[in-house]
Image (tube, rainbow, N blue to C red; front, top):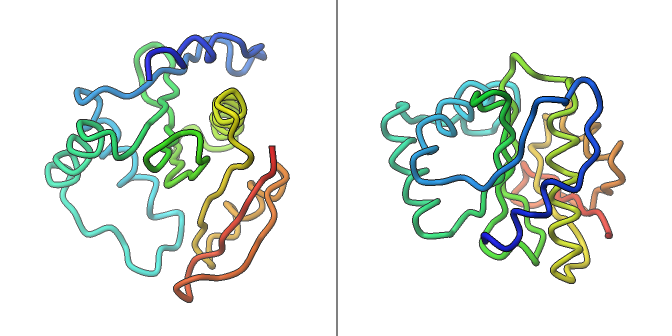
Length: 167
């Protein structure tokens, strides 16, 4: 994981994102990640809402990070978590299991920056695509991904749209 962190510095930042930084999550970031996901999840129109306390979800995120089950990129500004993107297992496979932005920072380019970083990481590892599942009723996320050249492949489990972007 550490060898890939250098890639994050290669992006040109615009004025809006001028003071943000990207880095890999550590176990000590689990609480901030859990709180951000819980606050942002209500906007994704989940079929089954997240039903965890912040403490329970923090423990889940600690295990996810500790076990390397999720490879998570954080976007921060002056030490404040603005958003994160997690790959499921190996980054090279390009399977994005979650992308969450703090609602206070919606529509400020953070999600786009995280997808750019994900694209670069997967490409550098000779991966071929990014994949993500989006809730059927999450029209905002569907539009976001389509704008970034993801295409819908179909519906799975009756409530998720599979989307893919070739790199």
